[in-house]
Length: 282
Image (cartoon, rainbow, N blue to C red; front, side, top):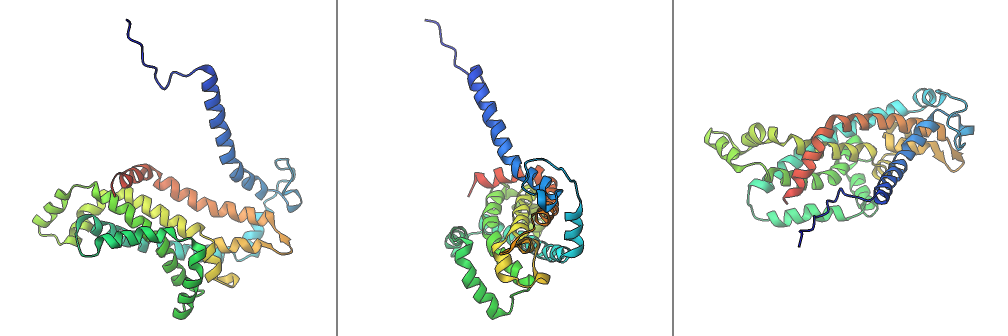
């Protein structure tokens, strides 16, 4: 009896191939429609914001209005301060925490790991009131420092878990060689292990950046007054009970998306490797 040839997953019928490509095209269209609609609408006057045509009356007025007549540049500066502080502090704390969990055994290590995991289970809406009361008591409302500390509570636990998994993939022999050369544990971490962890650091940095750059709930609850808002909170000023300035809001959203796209483009070569390494061990 002749051996039957095993069918490869790539051997599809024409109908199956058509269905697969049609599904991929539909998913691509669904994913691309919102940003394309946002971009096109930003070049339309408000009267044509919901028209089905592309651009009848092309205008840059929305962009000039946002930059010149609103607090957009102030919001941008506030966001840069918050994002820079959150990213630098968050990545450092997450990296040192992940390294300690990966290399050392100490009392309370297992409960600490569970605490880092459980904190991710609480939705932001549940935490707004206690965080608001805490920040009000400490005098941190309307202060970038308060918003940075709030975002660290979101970013650090997940990034610490990710970095712990990544450090698990780096041979312990590297640490041992550092100790032989007379380095302290922190010196071994800083000079030998951390340079090997660039993919994991890229993922942690990108996550903390996105957390601080795009978060809305905390930014609007803890920061009041237009001069104190970040970009995420400032977008909401274009929509009120009397109407919405869709042209200005879409123009501002496009400008906000540019830095995020640049950061993603800079970090994307490390993202896949970092996510894969961080997911292989826990």
